[in-house]
Length: 95
Picture 1: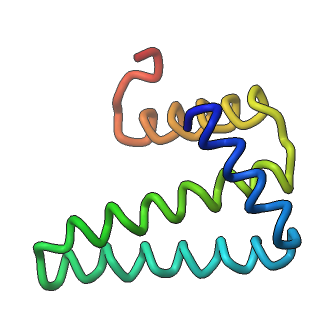
Picture 2 (picture 1 turned 180 degrees about the horizontal axis):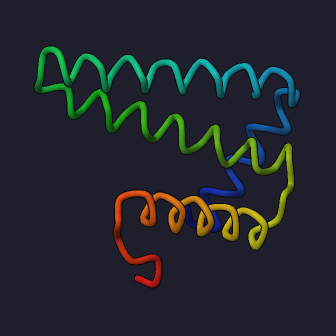
């Protein structure tokens, strides 16, 4: 996300309260799930998936503002999860 996009995301978060945006995040995650399942079952739903991915990404950025774990903590957790999964599937963890 660009710096300008992050500022817009923060402005929207400040307009609503944290609880409302956490609930909205759950709604957007559910809508993304539905779009993915529709694509699997019916096909040709890429535009809907893209739309819901954008909504979800915005909400996850807001969640990072609400729960400021810090970039390094999140990056470390992501690396841990990626490395663990690669080990499970027999891939290399030093990609």
